Length: 246
Image (cartoon, rainbow, N blue to C red; front, side, top):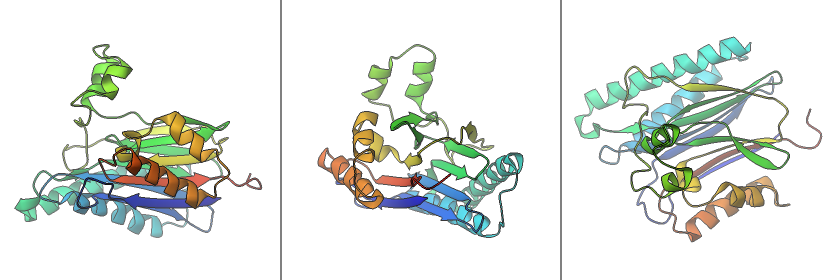
């Protein structure tokens, strides 16, 4: 497996509220996660850091995720813990009230692949050199699309397209959507909306399918997003199967 992650503040924001990680253990089990923080007097980066740091700490306590069911339970428990930690922080730091974070994660083992999502950061699998979005955005416009009140095209350019219906630190209780994915894929690609607001899936695919090394492909995606305006922080976590991988 090849993995690489990178985060960039973009061209407009003065600071970066995103956080990201990719981890693996001796059993060749992988955890990828992207968190896009928001709000609360520059405390968005605190919320996203709480999320990623707790994921890292809990992953490092594991020898293995075990069965698919135990991995699903692990994800659900971690999300509740992160949510409680963010609320505790805002209770103790009133200036940070209103901060929160999205979270998209993926677990890959030899037996299963799981995705989890809260908010509007995106999780994709790559199969037959095509990006397939796994996650569903928890946004107002996505809700309106699902009820037929907006078309996909209207949603893409809607002035309120970034209004979240669900985020860590904003909802209590919190629930994460979990997706069970076919293991016969070529890659896993997670990103914050700073990328998908600047580039469409076809543009992302074109760079991922080029002959560039994984690191250069990720850098090129970020540079291309910035060249188109870079209106938000841009974060990517990418896992790519090598030809010799099962």
